[in-house]
Image (cartoon, rainbow, N blue to C red; front, side, top):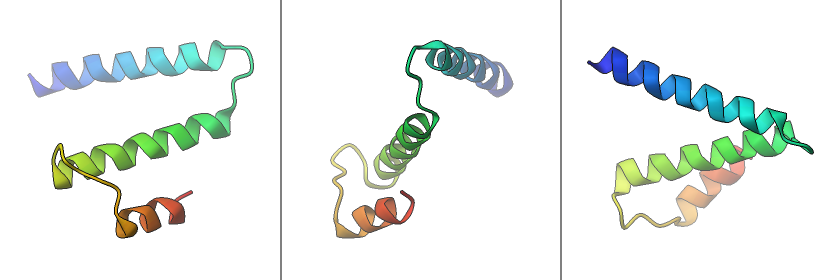
Length: 66
């Protein structure tokens, strides 16, 4: 079951990435930055729950990673 869900999710992410690359004015660095931001968001939600906020420590980690 996990494998099926994982495969569907991966297919969806690949379709989104392909659509983004096809857009006029696609900026790979902006895309990478957006991915890093979303990774931080999910990490904060996972570790701190729905009430997560960006504190000084989290902000410093984000800044260190661009």
